[in-house]
Image (cartoon, rainbow, N blue to C red; front, side):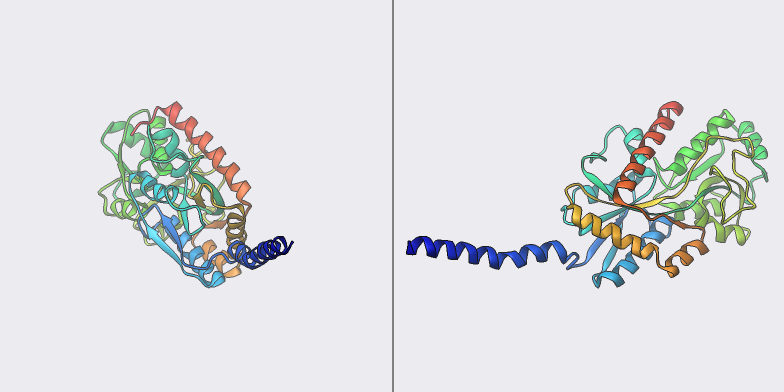
Length: 324
């Protein structure tokens, strides 16, 4: 009886002393720096959104959120880094449309989009606009289409990278013209934009926030918006559908993903805190000033959105027979 009592006492003591550790592990996230992988070069819309959210999360958590830019291979290098990371919430990824395009566009990926990764939060969205170099002899979409048709296989368009929706939008424009164009992929929006401004590439579908300063400076011409309705940030720019080119819908939405297996309580905490950040008046104002709308919501909402985007872009890739 003494032995049994002693054993019971020891077990109870063990459980009692271990309980605070268990609770601590579940409620003390984060207790060290968090890595946020951006699969693009610095300077683009995804990088801009990620950096501002990271800054505000750092303030909220008291732990540094470190941005790590890993561009290349149509974002698969950066996304694969997240997929292969420990599922503990300390490695996150910032993704955009290319994340949902790649499963249909690339014959093999180093990760399974649905099995190896999970949705955390949708953060922001900004419309894409069709911009051309100022020396391109076209001031309207009709004039550009006529120019493309007169030079089959000669005109070039830049994109954020292979598989980006900027890439697919350029391919759709070429399909509408009925003649091919040359696709020039970059490791992010900023380097692509610089080459369009310099005239090394004729045109691209760019995010409105990235294009606006160059449009205001007269370094680019805007011909239309790739959206279902005119942007509140550029109400004078007509949609491509208004101009007779339907079916090109493109935007730079930005969200957070984590490795599959990341605990629900951590995902839900990150999601809730991101939504807190997006609700800050200073954040909403800063994003609105450059044409970015905040898009708060639950992790489940973002997961459904990703599924719908994969279905949408998969259909586009198949119908247009787009291959890299």
